[in-house]
Length: 185
Image (cartoon, rainbow, N blue to C red; front, side, top):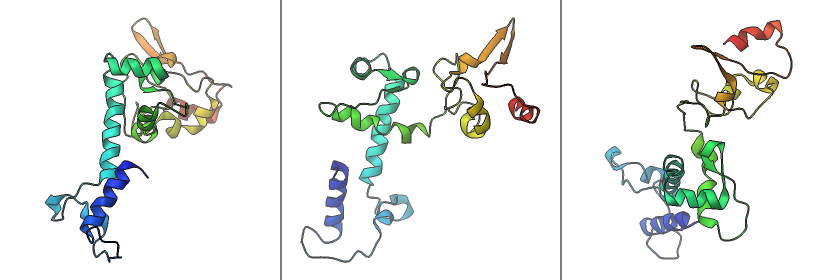
């Protein structure tokens, strides 16, 4: 059981009967008790959710403070991927529990990120949310399966000709007539 769950259990035990071992009935749902105080409830902080938020903050700091010593230590020890947005997965069974626990939350955390393209060297063309409300992989699944380079960055598919720019996505086969409208969109 995690530390956050143990702390939450202590909160529940205290609120619903002290530290006595006998069974007590709960007249109010725990989720309702954790509702903010301005809604007229107790406002006890949900420790599990709060812990996820704090771990998410470390993931955010990893991406935005890459020049700091602690980020460089994580990079040297585990390596980074996705253009420096997150560290590699940690598979070692010992000595890495802190960052390993933080890194586990990346998949959940990254769903709420949107990216500013800039040069396009750190943004995955198909997987990251950079053009609209969802990834291009989700919006155009048929085109994604036709793409020649599934892990391409935005800069890999953008070409410049003089002062004009255009998209040049390589597909594994020629585009059919009925697919042209989707490619244009």
